[in-house]
Amino acid sequence: MACKAPFTARLAAVCTAIAFAAAPAAAHPHVWVDVKSTVVYEDGRITGFKYSWTFDEGYSQMAIEGLDTNGDGVYDRDELAELAQVNIDGLKEFDYFTFAKLNETPLKVAPPKDYWLEQKGKILTLHFTLPLQTAVLDSAEGFTFQVYDPSYFIAFDLAKEKPITLAAGAPAGCKADVSVPAEDTAEAEKLGEAFFQQFGGDIGIGLAQTISVNCPSS
Image 1: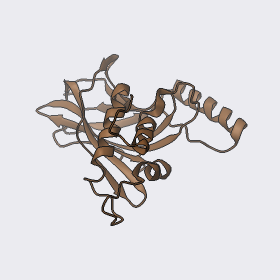
Image 2: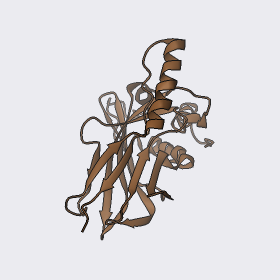
Image 3: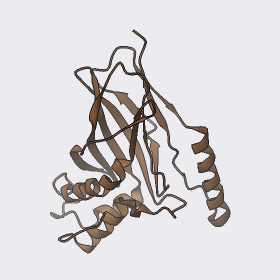
């Protein structure tokens, strides 16, 4: 994504960062995000996802610099509104790093809505709803989704507490299961080892965790 006027130089830098620079050569993460996902149901269909993405402290502090326009030390939703828009615009070309499928058929996403940024302490969280272009019957088998960056520029990890929720309207007995494909584990371990040998330390690659929604057979 290319940032355009009237963004300030700082906002342009944020734009570049949140678009993650589409850097296939990046062998390790530069931004870390904890993800909470709610699978949204309406009228017997899965219609999309409600997300809360919590950024690491380093990115959060860089992003909010200079946005406290009234100088009260609090970054409210209005002060963060332009930055929220920059985030959403920058994520568009990457399909919001969301990979949904019905069995082996990819499911496209629609433009996000209800997006806003929240600051707590030194941490930013981006909240948004991401609809599916075509809703899926809640009884359909083989519905899965992933939130990850194939280039490993950003490390997405499921939040430690309540990472996946099925919203009201989900059929009774449905549950979400999380797994990590063996090939993704091997690739992450290889990249992590290469980074450790060159620089030392654990970089937290961020695995492509697969969430599958499973319901009892009728």
